[in-house]
Image (cartoon, rainbow, N blue to C red; front, side):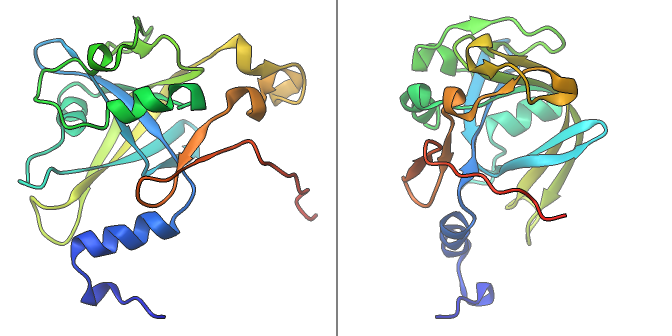
Amino acid sequence: MRVDPATLSPDAAYFWQIATIVPRPIAWTSTLNQDGSANLAPFSFFTGAGSDPPLCIINVARHKNGEKKDTWRNIERTGEYVIHVVPDRLAAEMNATSKVFPYGVDEFVAAGLAKTPSEKVAPPRIAAAPVAMECRLQQIVEVGRNVGAGSAVIIGEILLWHVSEDVLEEGGGAGGGPRIDPGKLDAIGRLGGSVYSRTRDRFSMLRPK
């Protein structure tokens, strides 16, 4: 079977993307709305983009009507956001925040999640998240064939990591310090459609020299 993007609708192309770019980590992203309420939404087009300084990328699409999603609007306005790792125990709450709420609705409240203050940025963190990355906007690159119908590649610098002691193990980290135990982190990832994956089945391979 051959799949030629030139013959596909944008929706069909998206279907093939999410079915073949797998598994995808989830950037559970908090921002501040213009009225000061907190926005929280998950994005699975998410990856690192460099380490000096540490950079990450999320891709945020527009709504079907062409309007920018709240996360895009808020980051563009404030330049600040927090990305959280999603553990299996918070999967239902993450999924609840994927709903399209009216602008100004506090998704922390809607999903029953407690907030805790960030240190270097204004948006709050999810208190129960095992990892949170406070980020500052570096650049927004709008991509897509048609202006006003595409998405935003949002590049941000990670200013501070918050890592729960509960997911750490001693040794093996940078400089011999602690590192994150993947089993304790118990992160989930996104597959195609409504399917997710857990990270409990793991194996190791040494890179060839």
